[in-house]
Length: 426
Image 1 (cartoon, helix red, strand yellow):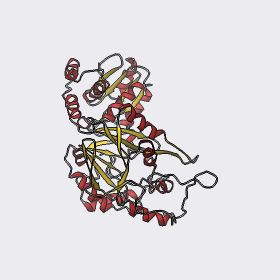
Image 2 (spheres, rainbow, N blue to C red):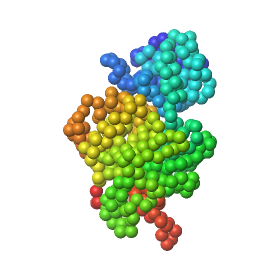
Image 3 (cartoon, helix red, strand yellow):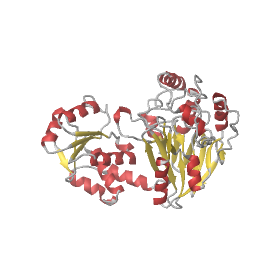
Image 4 (cartoon, rainbow, N blue to C red):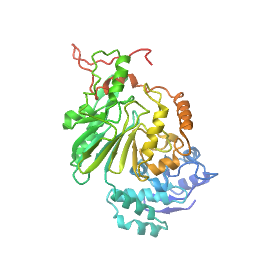
């Protein structure tokens, strides 16, 4: 397999066969990055076979699969991480080498080591057409909302800061409060990382937003409100969720009017983040209270739609409905095709790197839960899938916190806080 040397750190190549990995090792490479999704063409080795070939050759191996028209910053950063983890030069490949080189070059531009105007000439000097990288940079420059994601690996949750680049006003969406269920320990490492980013970028927090009461992690909304003074908000149907779980927890004192948040959004409500216009879409199905926040050219859909290779959200929680989720997804798909969608979880199917951004167009063409399927087919698919899924291990822990806006239980007489776990309730 012939590789093209970019610099002393990286070379790029087309698709290698099994013998190519031994040749890479003999050529002095220490690792391989596979930037090609499985199943692009018949006879393609695929991730599992490549991982085995790399191990047999004594090479480090990373899987960062991308489609050329759907590259996101998460892909670029994952590619950079894969490079830095190898102690020595790497060879990155896709089908022809173009996507691998695109990932490398875009990282150089984002980090200020290459002017955007030099990208195409850089590719031409190596024999590659990087017009796609130029278009990616042009599109990014025209985006109205700046989005920074924070991936929390314990629960595979994604938290966001979305900012108006002009006014430096921002909103925090679905922040995570740390919880170790084995030790019963809480913490704020994830939330503090968000605060550090806001401080370093000179941002002012205008909103702290939850898309729904989460079943797999504690919300850090209340903690962040105390740190920033910003108002908290959620969908108005959170009151339905409160009523439902008040009975499950046998919690007579629980207020079920949503007063734990500063604002309850209804379908069609609008608000602003600096100069960014934001709109709320009621998106039930995963829960009774789920909402989507459409902010500028971005939509934050959390547990409604995942990345195209991950499908859609489960609907088997109390109050969930596959039919309602289908209609919520159809409303989201009515947004402009270039709208960026940001999901709230990524479970890394096939062992790939974490991803959380897609577009309406990518969902329509590449999500098997969406493309070419009607409501009846979706409901049957979703319900069959849901029957195979275990309940989230933190569900009973988290909801008693999250239906109170992220407030931990009040300390008891000995100064300690206690969670209440209903037995045989679900």
